[in-house]
Image (cartoon, rainbow, N blue to C red; front, side, top):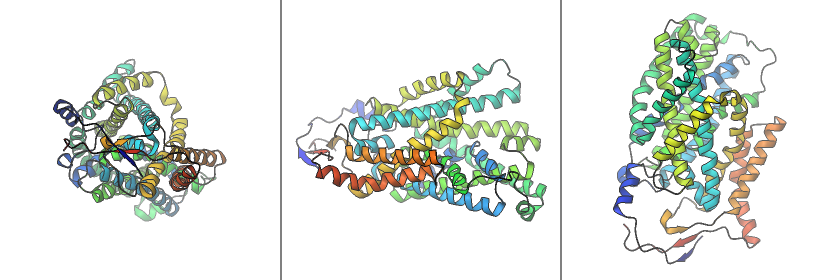
Length: 450
């Protein structure tokens, strides 16, 4: 796979190493001594997917399908999403690298810059969208009309603080909010079943939309709830002590807990005729609880979003610190939030479902079929500017997802992932046959490095 040649003989200075350690290794493999346990990773990932707006997807689908069909749709979509994210999480745990650093192996130096811009940029936009969502709730709950801009600014800064302090900040807040959120959701489920006459009453409800939604479209909506964030799961699974921990934690979070969020949203919509979980809480006279819950719930997702564009920025500009990019990303998000990005949310979600899943597919296909699970150290590789085999696989996956979406055929995100994965080994052979180089150079190991 590699051509070996002499490499640098001077290791990074102690000061640089300490800076990287304090900043969660955005440009390096996470060393074993900095790894965390299974429960730590599970809480961080569950805190990421415990996102109240996800319930809107379940509520939307509940009006178009009978209960038995709805359960199958939610399960199938969550299974596809969970397996895709779990495989990426496994790769992150095994390699100790973020998604954008994995993209450097697959796409080359400049190709990875595109991945950083795509993943970091979309997460900044998502941070802005969520900031508007959160500020509108606070304004309505506490009567801050006329000061919306101030609420956007303050809430955006506050929700970025924990991401600034790295993985430990994510771990602390997720460990606090996840159990509270789960208990409240289960209590609301109990109230909803009482209101509708139990499980039998729930199953007897007739869908409100007579024409309904296509089955494949419904599954796509479920997959799309977190396919963008899920592609960046290696950012956190790289802290797992064992690869299986990354796989199982991601599968639990994105299959089980994301499914629960969709499920709670659907039950609430059927029982209380409300498409918003906060509206359900308001019907139960839990105004203060609704505001407090949503604030902490959104906070856990916002901190992960800020963390994601922080590490993307660190790779983009090749510096060992993510914190400046968290600050800069939050500032850009505030501007976007104040200039109306929330109005473009539907188009934005469709765009994410086309652009991002093929990137994860390329990383998976490259890791399985080309690298075969072995990645050399970053400082032992001289990367190609662009690795055209994987770049081609990504473009074909993207084109497939785009055509599928335009023709309303099948599941666009799944098509993009599958085509990208399967095209990687084929493109490798084709480019080798054409004499186009697709392998990086492996440098000789520095004898002074640990």
